[in-house]
Image (cartoon, rainbow, N blue to C red; front, side, top):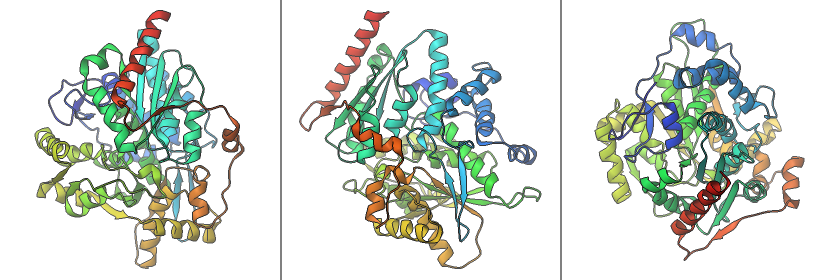
Length: 479
């Protein structure tokens, strides 16, 4: 299996190359050169599998046994999921009024990113140990990626991780999950800015190809192909749990509602659909609605500013993974994708060509949800089910309630739940509900913290470069 850049100007790479690269050298994102097509018999067989087994099947297709033999891959994936709190790893809650909530948050940091990052870290370790290499991982986070990435590599001898978090823009719990990991290989910076602003120094560092190569840098943000690959399993599992029967031909469709910020889960769903999974995708966003505007009107342009919302991990202006979706829906048109993305990068605004917009609006339905609708949804779900939703999950469930209020027949529907309500007590209180906080989250309050400030007026790019150079120097001194 080979991977090519969405912008078509970079050499193709294998899975290992895509894993360690993040962005392709031409600024694009890696995508499989060809997508395997899954027949009805394969889907029927996969419908009997557990979530970890589905991840194994997908990874086998996209990694290849010459890179990681199947028996080794099985062990790596079992290790990745061994610390999850639910024996199924991912669990479907069937609630009143046809509401199906797929809980993707049973990992160490109570967020869906644990699923893909635990696997990605295992793949990284495998290649690093095999080749006796060290990498420095640089991550920008809007809340959940940072803690999940730290959790997946903390204490590892051949990985250092640098995380930039937006001070005051994520919840106290999210911040503590990062700043309380006092390990030698974990380096956390608190940036006086939002998540889009802190991405600037990271992009600047990664644009210096010689620097990246010299210091073995990589990113684990949602641009990393390995994360999108594992996230495809959410859609397969959601489909198999919610499809009424797989004995009919053609297979019955299921609607999957994806709450998103950077569109990684949405890209994963689009790829699964292209491989033959009969899902209809609904993307649900908060008031930061660039994806909604793109689907509705072909308007792929930044708003004046990020709007803070209750669903803070989705307070994102630049949904990187839309580039993958544009490329996929345009029939792998790298020239068109490159022109579109370069214009967007130059002017922060572009309109999709008519044909691409028509394909996008045919493949995806969209909804933008206000804070008021988020709290109303959390309250209704609690009153009907005694079930607490996190504000991001409520963005998806809000769409479900809108549809059921219309009282029209609809497809079976599954709402992806990216995080536990336990991580967002502020939003739970805002909805007038009582938070339920697990002991391990309460304990964070009493732990030692470590975080270096990046203040307005500081040269963030220089600070980041100096930290990376210092880690490389240390690494050389030890080896």
